[in-house]
Length: 584
Image (cartoon, rainbow, N blue to C red):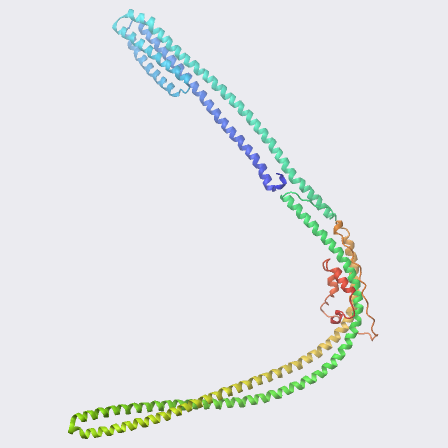
């Protein structure tokens, strides 16, 4: 994988990470070696301690052997025994403590075996010593001396020799531990030196590679920018990789391409401007002739506008008269609508009264029906009463006849009232229809009045508009005279524009672009000039307007991008006297 495929931050991180990793390895190795050295020193100290304790054991044992021999040689004197026996006991206890401490510190198998041999020989020695002391207590001096020469002294010598062997072996272990510690220290030094050398080499190599991977592309980018500053846009800028420097080179390449395109477009635009300035001069001549023709057309338009103004005023007067008549008709229709509304209200009242009468007749009919029922019940009761109720029966019959006649009359009146109500309802409907028709007539008259008002307002607006148009035509005549003066100024501006285009082309020629980026100079168009019109009196130039006149379309297209310029030139070359100059 190439370094230029990585970002600068990733490269720096990898380089510093490698150096830090080597530093961590050195620290870890140093720490582990220091721990091993510490353990070696601790082991050597332990061995030295065991050697010291073994020597102490030997000295204490030698002291007890001497005391035992003294007691035996003294023949078991009470004073000697009383003085040395407690000392021997204390020394034996001290030896026992030393023995236990050594036994707890032993780790080597050979040391353990020698220590076990010492323990066995000590026991044999103690047994011989106790036997000698027992013989002394018994008073057998001869046997004690014999035991001393044959058993006690040899046992003590063997015991002391075993302790000496143990001490010698521990000393050998101490020498070996010291040698191992020294060898570990030497190896640690060598490994640290090797790692330090490797770290220095790798760090230096990483620094050189990283520096070269950054500075070399930067030097190329600087050379490219110096070439661009000198005006040379032909040298390509190649960018390889994905790092920040490659992004910078690609950005410089895009900038160079944009500058090259811009310079090419400016060169093309200067040629187009030169061509357009020539076309502007030609167009100014055409504009002068057409301006004279426009002035004569404006005079004819002014006379026509005067006639149109008179006609519109007459139309406005007629519209005002019609508006007054429509207002009168609207007032009359409104009065008729009010009368019809009153008739509709009266018919509604009559209809309501007829319905009330019908209700009253219904009540009378009900009363007659109830009276008939009561008379029938009275006749029945009179029949039951016999002779006493005969007169009452006659009266009940008469009442019944009257009730029937009342019911019949109420029925006839009800039928007549029903027919009257139906007719009243029909009349109400007709009156309501007449009211709606009258309302529609009033609305139609209102709409006609509104339309006539609108016609009157429109006629007034037309009259005002005609006056404004007349004023505008007068202003247009003045502007036409001003245009004649502007044509001369435009010709001078065209010459100045041509000079500026030549200067711009000289400024852009400093840049050098690729062969494929060069553009061809467009051929200058030769527009056909219109036939000169008949000479007329010179027009007095009016003061120039305050706001700047808008640039002609040919000038705007000439200073645009390089693409549309040839189209403008071709359009100007094929211009005819009937083109857009009429709408100037």
